[in-house]
Amino acid sequence: MEYNSAAELVKQEMGQCINVECGQDVSNQILEAIKIRYSDCRCAFLFETDRGYERQTIKSYLKFFTRISDSSNELQAVLNNLELTSIESKKIKNCNPSELKLISFARVVLSNPEVCFCERLLSELEPNAKRLVLRKVEELAARGVIFITTLDPLRISTSMPGRSFWYDEGHFVMADIVEDDNKESEVVFAGDEVQVIKIPAKSETATLLLDPKEIDFVESSNKSNYVSVRGNLYQTNLTLDELEDSLIRFGFFRCHRSYIVNVQKVSKVERYTRNSFNLTLSDTNRSSIPLAKGRAEEMRDIYGW
Amino acid sequence: MEASLRKITALCSKDFPDLFKNPVMFLSALIPVVMMLVFKMLYADIEPLPGGSVEELRAAIDSFLLASGVSVTAGVVPTMIVIYSIAEEKEKHTLRTLMHANVSGSQVLISKAIVSMTVALTVELVLFFIIGVSVQNLPLYFLIALVGTIPIVILSLLLGLWARDQMTAGLVSLPIVVFALLPMMATYSADLWQFARFTPCGGMYDLLEQLIWGSVLTSEAIIPLATTLIWIIILTVVFLFFYKRLSRDN
Image (tube, one colour):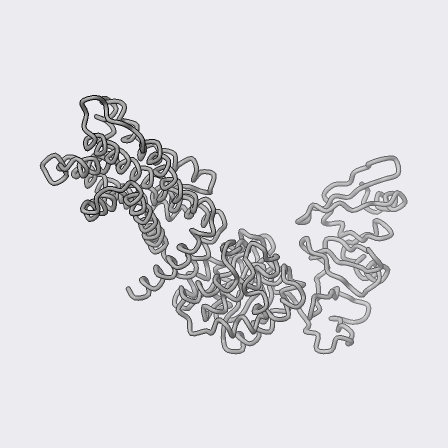
């Protein structure tokens, strides 16, 4: 499923929770679309830049916003829910990024919203804070609150309710996700054993099935293998050899003992020294991938560069 | 209307305690008080010139201190409270959070105006008792100080909207401080006074001097009063003209 603009995405997915992996500009477009589309609803907004009033305490900050929104939500209940009671007297300027995000989330919850737009809701949260936020999100979503999140990478946002999308050159593409009901279960491959068309990669609670053409490169580091998609690394359980076998037919090349690169994404081949080569990709991070000397010759033979 | 009042009350209840936590704002309220205490000490032992009466000297000193004290307060307090706090809200992105929590720009500005007026008037009241003028003058003094501070508050709101961050807030608050102090400096030059009396604080300065000399309820008060009221009208019109444009830019 694909949408061609933020307005279309918000319109077509109206009434549903959605999570979008995108940059700030696109997030702003989604925000504007939400303001128009959900103008009749009680909306609450959590921005990445929210830092609160640094001279206030957590409790006085939240109390202030409770008064602003005149909500019936109990401040103490929300503080308890999000385990903020023990630090309620802490000055906001002394809070760490995870606590700041939790406070902003508490502010959003206190306003008793029907629609919540949240920028990078989960990325900065510590594990326990993330568990608390996800529990609250689940509870609110079950009561019909619509969550629309942006900026979080797919590997994190798949823990949120609703569909996940990623943005690529003007298109919002729905991510293909298999929910992990049983953590031990093997990932189901689409197609037969030989004709692999998707690469399974772990996010926190789900397995993403990545289309080979989305993958920029595969990297092996610290005895784990990671697939790079739009600047984010996703861990995969497949070995580099298995990945090489699967991906070679999609134009991938084993350029180094620890790297497999999507040749279509290579924008520059450089020779640093007599024995060292480098590949620069055209991906989000303009990644640099090493090219082993022996492989460079093989690459030259295959592609004629 | 009820929701609007609730939000303004909530905003004021946030801004008032902040005055005591923010050293810059707290100091800005202390500056006029300390200044008047120093002046009071300096003029304590001054003797009249040969042939001059003690009463006249006393009135001259009181009128200078009273008018200068209120001018300094009007120049420093609203500037610091309004411009700096709006600029800080922008810089720390809390204004954006407020705007997205259904708080309007006008509600934020009204609360800043209320807080700065309250603090300015409180300081001006303290100054009245420090200077030690007859309490009979208090109602009129309070009225003149109130009306005279309004143009500076409006100007501060406008410049607060314009300032992008606390750095630019420092820059834009400078003209206000100069405007406010100009009548005080003009006591040393008759030519400068001819200009200073028509600046936003000039009318108020003149009226406060007349209060001590006893001419405030005569026709002499018409020009300074009119000056102040015209400034209030001009600045309100300018503010309303720029308000929409500046709040959209923000």
